[in-house]
Amino acid sequence: MITLKHNGDRDFRLLNLTDPQLKAEEWEESNKTGAIFKKTVETLVSRVSPDLITLSGDLSYAGDLVSYKNFADYFDSFKIPWTCCFGNHDNQDGDAPVRAVLDEYKKHPCFVFEECDPALGNGNFAILIEKNGKSAEGVILMDTHDRVPYKTDECGKNLAWAGLTNAQLGWLSDRITGLKAAGCNDTTLITHIPINAYLEAAQAAFKNPKPDKSVTLADSLGTKPWNAGYEDSYGVFHEPLSAYPEDEGAFDLIQKLGTTKNVICGHNHVNNWVVKYKGVRFIFGTKTGIGSYYEPDINGGTVLCIDENGVKSVNHEYVDIKELL
Ligand SMILES: [Fe+2]
Image (cartoon, rainbow, N blue to C red; front, side):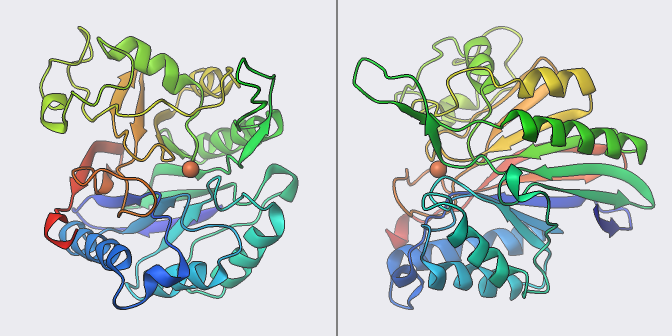
């Protein structure tokens, strides 16, 4: 298992970025989309001083190796450990393009990664954060693939967003158990596509558990959208939740093993709600940049502050880009 050691009084800061979806040409000097992405990341790095940067998938589009290489060169330039899991767009042409990206990324000294059984996908690995010599936090990144065959619906569609497979859940169980054996009792799971239990969490927390663009970010910071008991939730629900449509068993496993207190996903660019449900904080990461679809107010990243006992706070950090649009 990879270990990152951190000493001193200051919390370890994990900065999660998600869904930049940048194409090669958008990295060029004069391109607005690339400029907004870079301004966002540079503002966040300077404001947060992260100790680890995670990207929760959909960096670019499969096969655009120039863009993927640009990500690696760019993130390595900060001299901060960084890593990623892959999203549906990264995975949309099968394994070979993702393997080509990983071959490139592994040449970059700040890229944090560990190979596991390729039958489980590309990029399932765990990072142990050791704070002042104590096993503080396990960060587990998993590959949620692209789409999978599913029953045909009334519109004739027969694909669904993929969930974690049974084999992956077995691997996850082993990792969490291994982290517990190493004295780590706080774990964060990062995937691109939300696990199915996000649907349950939304049903429990929202008075209106459906996408509602009339509820603004400012509204979400108050109590108006939330059911009793969920008033500490925040963030918007502006598009349908794109999880695997049936319970894949991830939440049962997490609850049984007990130490996973936070799950983070991306994929839905204009959802960034954070809800604590049955002891687990369900987090939609704030989208980074304007690649593909976006809302100008929902731009930035998500910061986890970690001390010796694990994650002690989760906040979205926003970067104002309106003057660049
Ligand atoms: Fe996605």
